Length: 395
Ligand code: HEM
Ligand code: SF4
Ligand code: SF4
Image 1 (cartoon, helix red, strand yellow):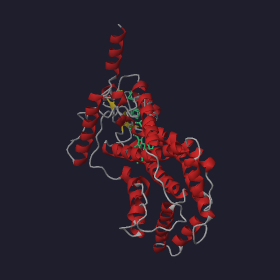
Image 2 (spheres, helix red, strand yellow; image 1 turned 90 degrees about the horizontal axis):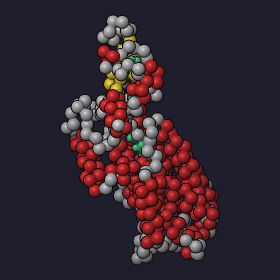
Image 3 (cartoon, protein in one colour; image 1 turned 180 degrees about the vertical axis):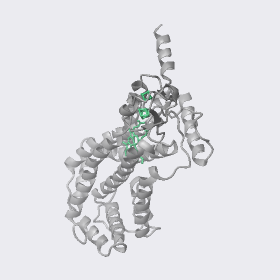
Image 4 (cartoon, helix red, strand yellow; image 1 turned 90 degrees about the vertical axis):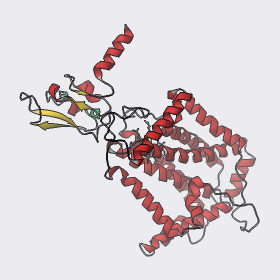
């Protein structure tokens, strides 16, 4: 994570803190502070939203593999294999619950994590790759959940299949025949059949493998990311999922072969994954497709949209009088945030001056260690002040 913690007040370098977004940023910091008064700061779950999402992912993978052992991807056997697993297999229903609730939790936490990063202005500059890979992760997770619900091959799965076909067919409005071709490809024919479930299983497991790749990309450019929350928060997360799986058995559904008639128990739609399916009752399929594409594109380009202002908190700052233009900091900076500007050094003996690009600086402090002349510093973590503190502590 970058060098400042979310509960730190903005530095004097912040250029105003008055827009609506800034107010939300302040509100996030205030909520953090309020929680920190009740529980020790290091256990504040809001500092680990990404990490908790990771824990949930870790719960999803083995529970999914367990379900896979029993799953039969044919229209005749899918429902009964899931039913057998839930009712007959020792702890089968609980493991299905873990898979379901960890999945719900993952999408909820990923959304909270995204909102927090957005409102605390942590999505631009060197965070563009974490942001973009995060958007891909969010949509991948949503798609994995959707295909997961379809695998059960109950009445709900049939409605989801119909919704998917309608949404995909909307592509016909852009390129004639393309949507129908995709829908046929998804179903493996004109109507749902055994190929449909084989393909859905692939579309459930394949993107899950891709999640690992995008998680790796997600952390690639982050400086010391907090990938896992502290043990207490991890155990709490696991405990909540286990408790939910134990106490809240999954709803009973009817097989896809049972016609849907009025008066029977309502089909339960999970808003975490099935919002687009639910929305089909009030919005037409092409609009849902357009909204999804717009949402994806809008989120993807967000880091490059012009910002009114930035809230620079603790980016490296050069003291020009001390800088000899030796370039050591520019060579060591892993984020290419330092440029050597010829003719800018106030001392005529030196040809260049180190200048920090605020947008690119990750506040990692590597340049501070690289500079032999105390010419570059992080304002909130002054090198000498930290050294004096350590010396005082050792006395
Ligand atoms: C879906 C699963 C996701 C997982 C498991 C995940 C996990 C993480 C973790 C563990 C970190 C490091 C946290 C830290 O050091 O403070 C992180 C950082 C980050 N994530 Fe995610 N994330 C996910 C989705 C997203 C989404 C949907 C977005 C936004 C669209 C996003 C944007 C970011 C950004 C911008 C950072 C950098 C934050 C910083 O430097 O403080 N992530 N993520
Ligand atoms: S300028 Fe310094 S603090 Fe900023 S990213 Fe580069 S090395 Fe890290
Ligand atoms: S390492 Fe220090 S002296 Fe050398 S260019 Fe960078 S800031 Fe200037």
